[in-house]
Length: 76
Image (cartoon, rainbow, N blue to C red; front, side):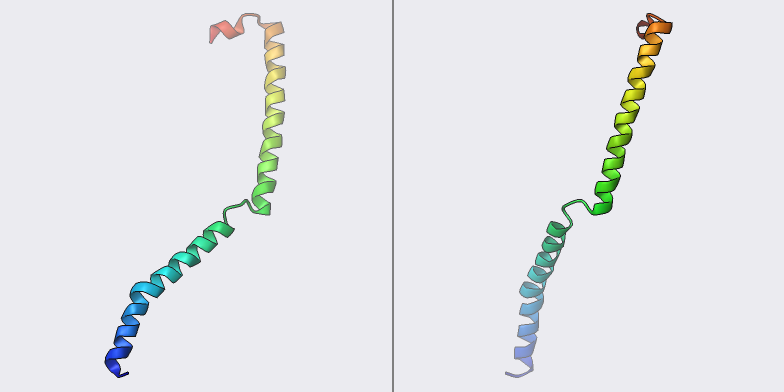
């Protein structure tokens, strides 16, 4: 196998093996990164708790407004 054979093997590698290798590499990375990290889960839990507290505050404010300014909803 002379210099031409090495050239043919290099071309075959670059046109067939290398692209498949790169594709499989990034598919594997994508699959492993698909889930949430521990930090993401912690942040999401904090946001969920904060949203719950805000909802409770809004309900409380609406009750106060209903008692103090009846009809405030119709003025929107």
